[in-house]
Length: 68
Image 1: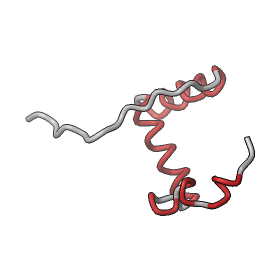
Image 2: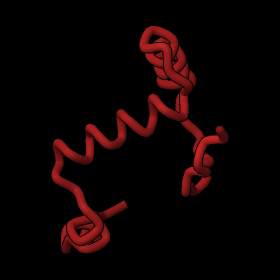
Image 3: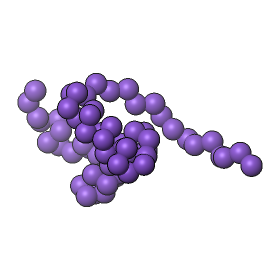
Image 4: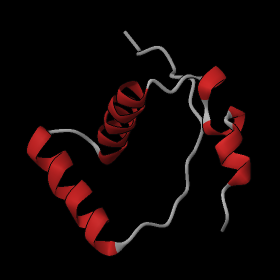
């Protein structure tokens, strides 16, 4: 039986080579694809920060006041 299609958005980013290598090693150690590893790591980080759509950085005053 075929798997249900996953609702997803593409994410294209540039990251430092050392971070990419760490991600590759992490995913390999965990037996995951890089996509799954990134999804799980981002979810864990956002859960720790308690970030939800209503509390995202865009809705926080300090986001708009931050200097580049």
